[in-house]
Length: 222
Image: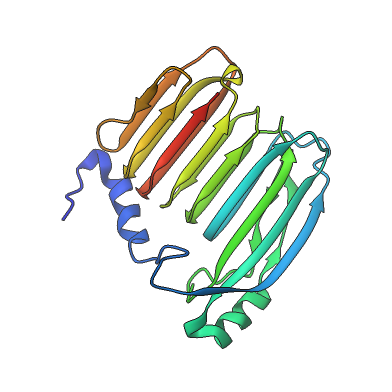
């Protein structure tokens, strides 16, 4: 049983809330893809992209292309297939511009009643655009970006691969799990609770990762 001090009250309250949400792709459940969506977005003059998902996995790859290419797969638990399909059929990709930022959201998601639905989103996007990720629970994979990376997750693994010369700061907080920063010559391990990494380099961009619950974070700068 974890006791919340006053300085950690918010983190503990969030941990208590997400502990009742099943991890996407857990070994005890069998999932099958029931629906897929694709959309190409022109970021225009956007100064960044904000991704928000509930339960599922997100893969982001930085490219030299001008557009944001989004592929979304919705999976259902075989144990509740009929109801799950009906919920999945209501989900829509809902990108929009707000205050100079491209926001990629899913509308009509079954937030209050997950019941077997999970999302897998794959994104190819211009490598120079900063990203912000908000994920309730699931895994995040990011590679090829040369911009600011900000990831906030309720629980799940986070893996980031980048070029060392572009980044000046790597700040990582992990509630229950491991945190590792891999460099060519060394490895920096997270310490304390939550596990923390604070590293400074020679670039001008920042990587910030905060996993409130359980999950392992690995940042590799080559």
